[in-house]
Image (cartoon, rainbow, N blue to C red; front, side):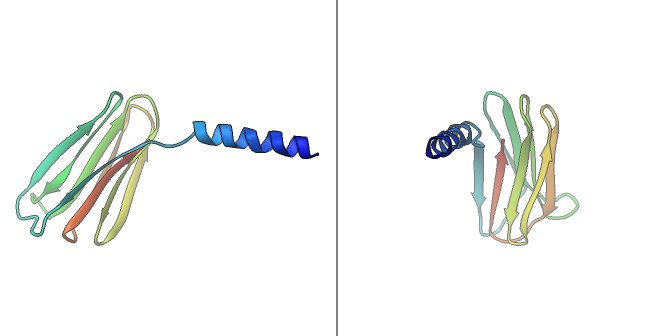
Length: 109
């Protein structure tokens, strides 16, 4: 029984290590958010465009895509955390009303 428990524990550790999620995080802090801005982050299979606009409302946005796996785009501002998930090759778009002096934009996959 001890041998079976040890084998099961080792299997969980091995599979747990191999199934870790990866993430890229972009943060932008500013006291005023007085001007619209946009940035893009990318890697070998993914990209995320994120920023702040003032067109209709003051808005924080992040639009992420990954070509080979499902992914989640996340925005955290003073109002809370918002997220959207999508399958490979599809955009996960988050657009929320701006709040606070610091906003975190994140894409997890």
